[in-house]
Amino acid sequence: MKKTSIQNEMFLEIRDKELFKQVQQYSFDYLENVFDRNVYPTEEALNDLSKFDEELPLFSTKAEKVLEQLNQYGSPATTATLGGRFFGFVCGSALPIGLAAKNLATYWDQAPAMNVLSPIGSRLESVVEGWLVELFKLPKGTVAGFVSGTSAANLCGLAAARYRILKKNNWDINKKGLYNAPKIRIVAGKQAHSTVLKAIGILGLGQENIEWVDVDNQGRIIPEAIPELDENAILILQAGNVNSGSFDDFETICNKAQKANAWVHIDGAFGLWAGAVDELKHLTKGIEKANSWAVDGHKTLNTPYDCGIVLCEDKEALTSALHMSASYIIESTQRDGMFYTPEMSRRARVVELWAIMKYLGKAGIDKMVLTMHERAKQFSYEISKINGFYVDNDIVFNQVIVRCDNDKITERVLNNIQNLRECWLGGSVWFGNKVMRISICSWATTKNDISKSVKSFQKALELEITNANNVNR
Ligand SMILES: *Cc1c(COP(=O)(O)O)cnc(C)c1O
Image (cartoon, rainbow, N blue to C red):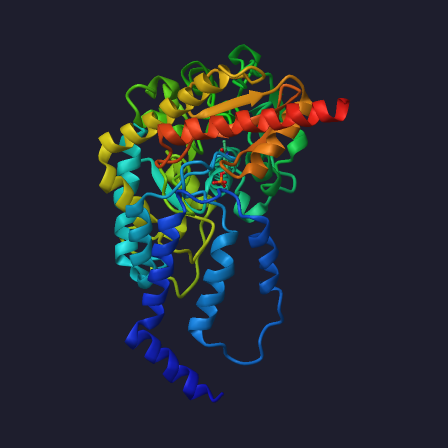
């Protein structure tokens, strides 16, 4: 095929829009089904993934054929995280307005690295930064970087901490690196999220240097167990334990850290949003005394993937830690997004974040997040009534930890639940026991979804009992 002919074809695709209509139809079909279908792909759908195992074609493929393949074999091999019965990890769904706004932004194809690259992207980042600071009641002057998730946000927050602490020691980390640098202390709870450890590793601070703090039976840091802090210490706290959903006692701990001039970073991936709910905001009391915060849009707020935010009250530390410069950069008097993130180019994910916050408003966010909490309590209540299931945590937010009589049974029942595909969740280990971890994090989870899922748990346990009896006979 000659070069000009494929270019002509592409202009035709833009002009007649058939391609986009085709994809719109596929999207509508997907949305029609995703709330009722099997939550995990069927065996057949998984086997059909082999259709993608092919060599890179030598010649061009018709665009409609490319989309056809993607729809026919791709769509059935998705997990229905968008629906109301995916309880695995901590995943959000996506609000319709978020999907729609992201769709529009897809056609804009903006990269808000610099203001000149995307005035709309930059303006929305400024606006949403202000909204988030107000919603979480963070100190005036707190800035935001819009990144892919809390993994990246933790990395950025801790990079800012590293910059600030070394700067106070007359050490410019960007110029001198870590060789012979003054030592930075890292203090973290024994149940800090694995992405925090990853960030510590990437930043060269060394996971073996962590001073571990004991936690209570909900996974919360025991304030009295925190070692003496000083101004060379980074203390890492958690809003929303990934298993139990518990929150550290920020008020007590941050007061202590402030007195010692230590840097406090809060990993609030899904839990920070409790601060936006009247009935739950006691959980985040005192967070405003920290220095940096990491939070996701794509979990509790239900933005489409991907969306995370780093917030930092020390603008100079964050922007210096992530600074880059080159002769061709055009700096604006307004916001240039790349000074707040590790990347230069990245998509304008703020568009759907803005759209969702505007759509819901404060009252809507409050209601949506509170409903997740209520569904978690419903789940806990209904599952506790079934003989053979035990709830192992206090339901303070959206997480429920469930186990059976022993590890073997818990594992097999979890396996049965996953095979039934009526809902989906994963396992974890909680104080030495194998457990099942339920995360209610979707706007779409109804009361009925909870009851239906509890029934699936019951079916899975009955299957296990039947199998055990058959083996014994
Ligand atoms: C999910 C999660 C992370 C990681 O966030 P990503 O958005 O997946 O990068 C970090 N900490 C906690 C507590 C989480 O729940």
